[in-house]
Length: 150
Image: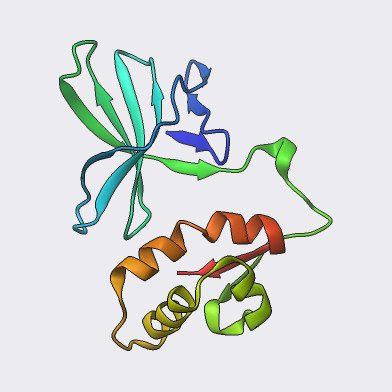
């Protein structure tokens, strides 16, 4: 199963399904122990909720009946909408230590930068700062066309 990055359109076998809500809620826990946060809700075969793990960033589609009884979980693959691909300025994937400090400081706090670097280097870090920083990765990528390697 696939979902379009940004618009959260679900690409089902019977055609694209637009979300009815993009509300974010804590809806459980991932296999890695991280928190699952809802990204989009769909009226599909009952109900379906696209969720992402706050730690490993794994995407999951949770399927429910019309009465919200859980049916199953399915892995989701995030794809880029072909209309959004910028071939003139491709996204560069780099470790946080390779990004100029001025660019990092324009989006992240000092504590977030410090702990992202500590995580990359294997030193102790504050998990909450890394969590907050990861929530800003998409904004950073849109601004600078640089994807930070987690």
